Amino acid sequence: MRYSTLSSNPNPSTGRDLKDLRDWELRNGGDDKLGTVKDVLIDDGGQARYALVDVGWLLNPHHVLIPLRAVELDDERRALIMDGVTKDELKRLPEYSDQGAVGDSYDREFRESMAASASGRTADAEGTSDMQADAETGREVHVQRVEEELAVGKRRVQAGAVDVHKTVETEHVRQAVPTMHEEVEIERRPVREGTPDKGEVAEDEVRVPLMAEELVVEKRPVVKEEVVVRKRAVEDTKTAEADLRKERIDVERQGRRAGEARSDSDRGQPGAR
Image 1 (cartoon, one colour):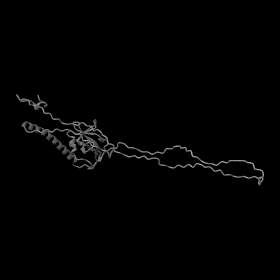
Image 2 (image 1 turned 180 degrees about the vertical axis):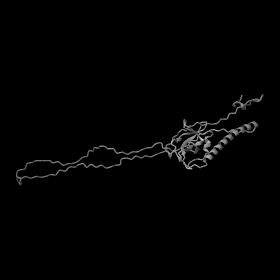
Image 3 (image 1 turned 90 degrees about the vertical axis):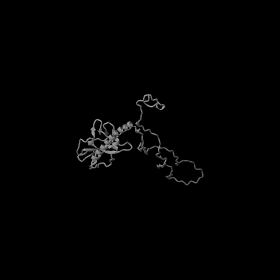
Image 4 (image 1 turned 30 degrees about the vertical axis):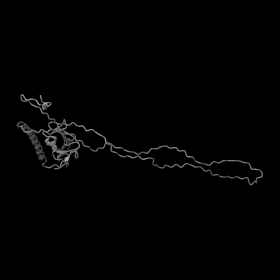
């Protein structure tokens, strides 16, 4: 069956009171966080049917479908409550990747998977009784000690950017340039006696051209410098912090037979008296 998602259809034609469960938390009865709701699947009638929940880690997401009929809504804490389930059990559900398609038998398979997980928890509890029985009958008892380790990965994210802008500015420039020009000098000198007189009285005009240099201003672009922008990898160290849990096994003796001497190996043992 095909469903639409709330992200792709934020205003369905029906179901006006549809609650937006995105970013709500999925928790169990012990108030442990199991995952975060990423989207809601809606049927043709505009009713919410499934929650798409990420039950993985930051660097390893794992999306599963949770039928909304299997949870209770806590509006005050913005949480979906699902009793009797752990995060590891939900992570064993198949990864959901097809945004909209849900098989007709999915609800039944989901119930069977949750029932199998509950049976496994019961078997674990019975295993504890078997271990106690082994201790009472003198058989070997194997107790495992578990502790959490920190797994740190890396991913590339954009940490910023460098913008290089080229703008045009106007600068008023003065430049002194030597130039040449011609001037007229007038010299009057007398005519010596005896010089043949060829002149006659008449009006006349002589035009003497004067030359001068003038400035011709031309602007032309000239490359003065260039800016080179390159990236380089810089290695630094960042600290990842987390609170890790680990188990500790203490052995305490509960009594001693009368007259039994305490050996040197008993000294320093927890519970030794």
